[in-house]
Image (cartoon, rainbow, N blue to C red; front, top):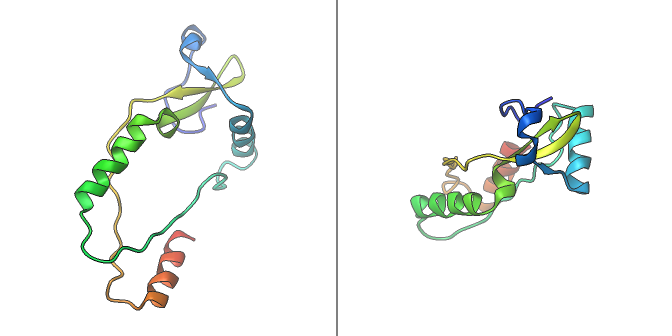
Length: 116
Protein backbone atom coordinates (compact mmCIF):
# COMPACT_ATOMS: atom_id res chain seq x y z
CA UNK A 1 0.00 0.00 0.00
CA UNK A 2 1.30 3.45 -0.87
CA UNK A 3 -0.02 6.08 1.50
CA UNK A 4 1.45 9.09 -0.29
CA UNK A 5 1.05 8.17 -3.94
CA UNK A 6 4.71 7.34 -4.61
CA UNK A 7 5.74 4.58 -6.98
CA UNK A 8 5.21 1.15 -5.40
CA UNK A 9 8.24 -0.21 -3.57
CA UNK A 10 9.80 -3.50 -4.59
CA UNK A 11 11.55 -6.16 -2.53
CA UNK A 12 14.72 -5.76 -4.62
CA UNK A 13 15.03 -2.09 -3.67
CA UNK A 14 14.37 -2.63 0.04
CA UNK A 15 17.95 -1.78 0.97
CA UNK A 16 17.37 1.83 -0.16
CA UNK A 17 14.55 2.29 2.33
CA UNK A 18 14.72 3.37 5.94
CA UNK A 19 12.54 1.70 8.58
CA UNK A 20 10.01 4.00 10.21
CA UNK A 21 10.63 5.49 13.63
CA UNK A 22 8.08 4.68 16.34
CA UNK A 23 6.28 8.02 15.87
CA UNK A 24 6.20 7.51 12.09
CA UNK A 25 4.73 4.03 12.54
CA UNK A 26 1.95 5.55 14.63
CA UNK A 27 1.16 7.96 11.78
CA UNK A 28 1.32 5.10 9.29
CA UNK A 29 -1.24 3.03 11.21
CA UNK A 30 -3.52 6.05 11.67
CA UNK A 31 -3.41 6.61 7.91
CA UNK A 32 -4.36 2.97 7.32
CA UNK A 33 -7.29 3.18 9.72
CA UNK A 34 -8.57 6.55 8.46
CA UNK A 35 -7.10 7.29 5.00
CA UNK A 36 -8.96 10.58 4.52
CA UNK A 37 -8.20 11.99 7.98
CA UNK A 38 -5.68 14.80 8.29
CA UNK A 39 -3.66 12.97 10.92
CA UNK A 40 -0.55 15.09 11.04
CA UNK A 41 -1.27 18.46 9.51
CA UNK A 42 -0.52 21.66 11.32
CA UNK A 43 -1.59 25.09 10.16
CA UNK A 44 0.31 28.17 11.19
CA UNK A 45 -0.08 31.81 10.39
CA UNK A 46 2.08 34.80 10.99
CA UNK A 47 1.61 38.52 10.84
CA UNK A 48 4.06 40.65 8.94
CA UNK A 49 3.95 44.40 8.72
CA UNK A 50 5.38 45.97 5.60
CA UNK A 51 6.01 44.53 2.15
CA UNK A 52 6.50 40.80 1.68
CA UNK A 53 9.25 39.51 -0.61
CA UNK A 54 7.30 36.47 -1.77
CA UNK A 55 10.12 35.18 -3.96
CA UNK A 56 12.57 35.24 -1.02
CA UNK A 57 10.03 33.45 1.19
CA UNK A 58 9.38 30.80 -1.48
CA UNK A 59 13.11 30.30 -2.05
CA UNK A 60 13.82 29.94 1.69
CA UNK A 61 10.92 27.49 2.11
CA UNK A 62 12.10 25.34 -0.80
CA UNK A 63 15.67 25.36 0.53
CA UNK A 64 14.40 24.22 3.94
CA UNK A 65 12.38 21.38 2.40
CA UNK A 66 15.36 20.29 0.26
CA UNK A 67 17.73 20.35 3.26
CA UNK A 68 15.56 18.17 5.51
CA UNK A 69 14.86 14.71 4.10
CA UNK A 70 11.79 14.17 6.29
CA UNK A 71 10.02 16.96 4.36
CA UNK A 72 10.38 15.15 1.05
CA UNK A 73 9.93 11.54 2.12
CA UNK A 74 7.02 9.19 1.58
CA UNK A 75 5.87 6.00 3.30
CA UNK A 76 5.45 2.71 1.48
CA UNK A 77 5.56 -1.01 2.29
CA UNK A 78 8.26 -3.56 1.58
CA UNK A 79 7.57 -7.15 2.52
CA UNK A 80 4.46 -6.01 4.38
CA UNK A 81 6.45 -3.62 6.59
CA UNK A 82 6.20 0.17 6.43
CA UNK A 83 9.34 1.98 5.24
CA UNK A 84 10.38 5.56 4.51
CA UNK A 85 11.55 6.55 1.04
CA UNK A 86 13.29 9.88 0.45
CA UNK A 87 11.95 11.46 -2.74
CA UNK A 88 13.86 14.07 -4.72
CA UNK A 89 12.94 17.51 -3.39
CA UNK A 90 10.64 19.53 -5.63
CA UNK A 91 9.78 23.19 -5.91
CA UNK A 92 6.65 24.34 -4.08
CA UNK A 93 4.57 27.37 -4.86
CA UNK A 94 3.24 29.07 -1.77
CA UNK A 95 -0.41 30.08 -1.92
CA UNK A 96 -0.90 33.63 -0.72
CA UNK A 97 -4.12 35.12 0.59
CA UNK A 98 -3.89 38.90 0.86
CA UNK A 99 -5.86 39.97 3.92
CA UNK A 100 -4.41 43.46 4.13
CA UNK A 101 -7.77 45.14 3.41
CA UNK A 102 -9.33 43.51 6.49
CA UNK A 103 -9.08 44.46 10.13
CA UNK A 104 -6.81 42.26 12.25
CA UNK A 105 -9.83 40.45 13.75
CA UNK A 106 -11.44 39.91 10.32
CA UNK A 107 -8.14 38.70 8.85
CA UNK A 108 -7.61 36.23 11.68
CA UNK A 109 -11.16 34.90 11.33
CA UNK A 110 -10.76 34.52 7.55
CA UNK A 111 -7.37 32.77 7.92
CA UNK A 112 -8.78 30.30 10.45
CA UNK A 113 -11.69 29.60 8.11
CA UNK A 114 -9.36 28.90 5.18
CA UNK A 115 -7.30 26.29 6.99
CA UNK A 116 -10.18 24.62 8.86
